[in-house]
Length: 187
Image (cartoon, rainbow, N blue to C red; front, side):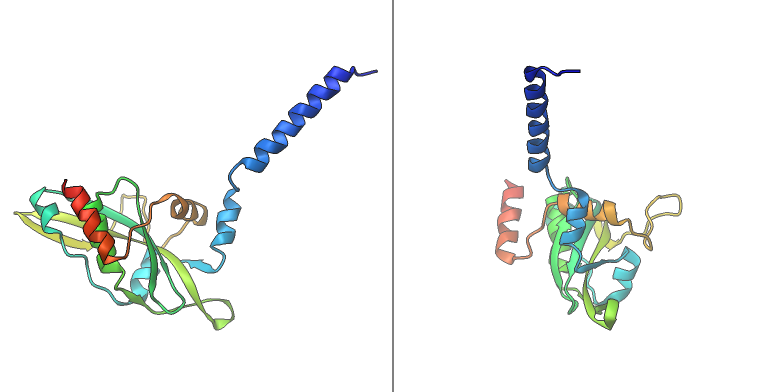
């Protein structure tokens, strides 16, 4: 069977287009895991237990005045020395509550996580906080899921958690930025 020149040219153009599309597409999720290969993924229960110094966030007065409450979920990286490096927050979280959590958690210190070879290793984990208002008073606590909820403090799902790490916005750990954020929110 003899193929016509136009057919072959068309097939080559389609093939070349497919290669260009593949080359310009975002890296597969394994690339995200490669970026995080120096981090141990730890479930929330382990992160909580490894905290040496941990203060709960202070309920922001402006959030109390505006009757803002809810659950704030964060992802954080912890250095091999036990210091908080970065904090990311679930999208569409109230920025006032998110900043209150970041201001508190950035001061936390953790026992170093011992990885392969018995060497301290950086960690990626999660924490969740509940902000409630009862009788006009604000209360903050670590969030404890109810038995009927799907969330598990002792579980982790690497693909899901690495994807969230990539997609969730980072919260500033600098004080100067915090005031700018609060001023913007109040306008």
